[in-house]
Length: 389
Image (cartoon, rainbow, N blue to C red; front, side):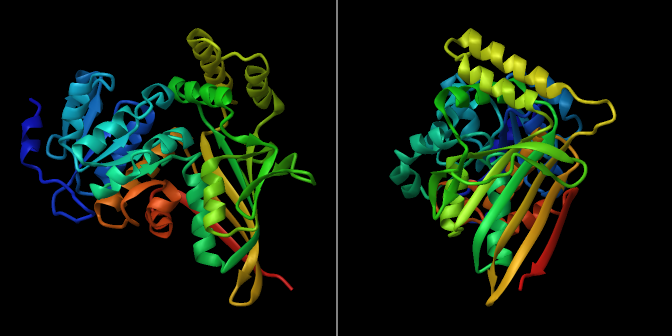
């Protein structure tokens, strides 16, 4: 038997008040990202969970024997009554459902109306701009909305922000490489195809003094990363989340490199763009399927991993320093996205938050505290700091 109605007595989190009992709602709990978020909350907190998905029976089968910690509720994102009912029973909602390009701001709007905090794993600059139109309403209700709280974007901004806060007074040059081995869900691939259509992300571009600039000098076309990534083809790209982070941290020059095992993967993106294979819904889904098949190919002896490798040069207490830092998770990026989002929610409900409003993740929560708690969850984090003369 489901014990959903037990939630009717749960008190709500308002204005950042840390209450003794909190309920974290996970939408899309049956997906790869959602499952990781659920397991993270169960393993590292004592907070109560409300799990939402389209198939209530599947929810029960995936998470058996946790009735004391969680309740289950069938939710259809496109059914306003069911969605509002779900959000209204939570202190905070973590949206792991997708694809985000189809959902747009449906879940976020329900959270605003119901007065609950919100974390979006895959929301991007388009969702951010939509929500900023309701900035005053979000602030007046003393709510905190966190957008892009996954791996990329998300951790790709959290990690360099953490480095800037922890190791430097100022940074002259920062280079960040993202590498991974793992599959794409169809929802994630669909969002990528839509981003290609919308020109989200600027190729051959870097951030200089807080502004996007085309690269007119040398850059890395390939790079040898630590094991297990090894030598990778690289491509510089810049998104709004990374630009905002670099501007806030006053990084003079910041480069983000997406990396690939070989050019064939990058060529898939180029082909989708060049042939405009996103004009119709059928084309979008076909392109998404192609990407899932491409990224799903790997050698049998190769295990999934997610890596962020960072090189930064700057000053600390009058000394010129170089930091080489690697964040390695020995699993795929879908799982890590769920871990990141769950820990963002954890910090929010436990009072470790900046202020009310809508923010990209690197500004909305304390990045040093986030890296600290994530670093204790099967993460290999290495730093080498050298004084330059």
